[in-house]
Image: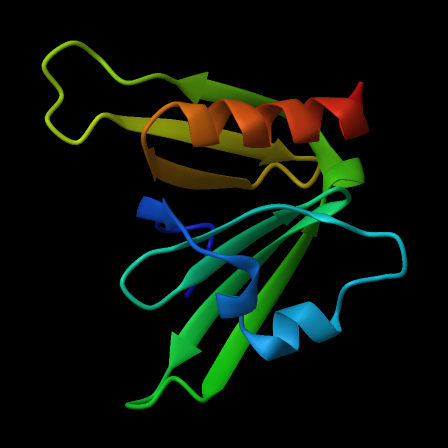
Length: 125
């Protein structure tokens, strides 16, 4: 997955126990998970310090590519809330980094988007 080229769409919340073990192993002491989400196979994990983007590869998903995006490198972010009549109630978070790249995350529902945006705000403001 090249996070700069394609957004992670239709993210649905998953329990912490379902986060891939390699991403959990990268957590630091005191770092807490704000929310964990998945597409069909890939995962996005938002913590109190950074974002883990997990690309599950291969037939079984045992091979994984993990991008770690620290909040301290974020210059700004934008949100797009769900509109009237949107059957999936999709909302979007766009995060812009100091190296001029961006990552996009599409959530099902608006509450998840706002919780993640608040966590990012705490770190960059």
